[in-house]
Length: 191
Length: 340
Image (cartoon, rainbow over all chains, first blue to last red; front, side, top):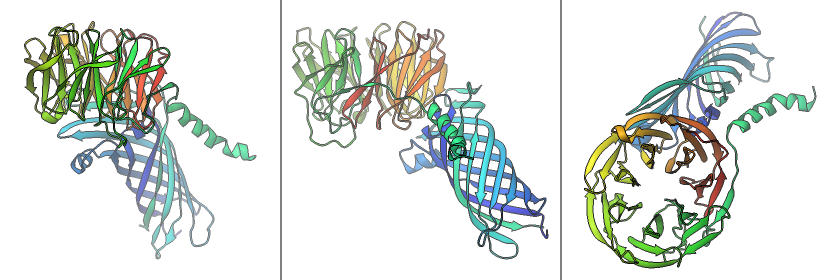
């Protein structure tokens, strides 16, 4: 192996699935998200690498009624993940990558209406994430290609913040939510 | 590995999501003339008529739906319109009951109508000074109060003591940044209405004076309800939050919960302690329970039709949810126990 350290950057669109808490779907308050991410991977063998990844995604609100309100009502979804990356056999001009991992997630959605705001926040572990990437070589060090990924997680804590009230509690019962991502990844071999 | 075995993880995943997203159950009550859609807004329940009262918007009727049989009788003579644009700005949109009569407001003509529900006739009418939103009967003063957000005011109409309760203009109360929604606590002699954001206004119905303004926990204030016996005031928010305020202690927030989204008109059953919230953004009906100390908890969630934003409770353990595009109401059997 000539290179053992790789730096990647991703941009994607993400669709939510499932329940944030009992009686509350993730899609109640957000249509989706547009995550941008960074990852750092260390290639251990010709077939395997370990990856640390993080992403931040503005979440698109379902309820705002004007440009100002919608801009102010953008929420966020932040995820950190540790994954293993398998390099699959070369197909055509790409060496597909399959990644499996776990992580942690913080989700906040909100509505701001003429200066008044209310937000919901959730956090909890990502139990499983899987990603398939198809990188195409741009030169000796750079790759660019599409990827698709999915994740499943549970939120263990929820919070509600309004102008007159603030609460933070454990999520009662366990329900599953997830995200489906489609995006592109640019990477460079650093060492 | 068989195809079924290969598909098993995906099937399990789909089953988890399906199990989590609510249930669909209910019986429809179509409104005559409503098949192309009705811009429902306010819904009420009349214990004396044993009927859900549903102003029929462009269909030109006030519908009275028997809570048990779902049989629909109508009062006609209200504004009709052939077209349905999805809004609730046409025809009759609000109703309330008092003195054995029904008070209905018509947004198109900007009129208040007094209706005899047994004869199913309009007894008297009065032009209003602005487009009406909610009409509520005030027993203590023999008035109806009408919220008129387009005029940023509450209009108070005095009722005659005659059989037709002949209405006449009484007064106007300016409400900056409102009023949104309206409910009367007949026992306490208070009227509650929201500003569009953040707070609820409390009026003394006898003096017509603003006596308090409470933070209500909403970014976008919408529906409201009162539990007169327990002194609870419920503030619903478009963003999906419901808060219980202690009406006896200057509106102190007892609890809040956020489930679903896109709420507008909320229903409350004081016998069960159940609140019904229909949301456009979640396309759902969320059922919450309130304890004797004012703590809210989730009881369940049902699927609802597109555009469902209004709900009402009857006294037979049903929630009723509007289905504007279908021109009908759905009756949901509430399976949950008393929350107090």
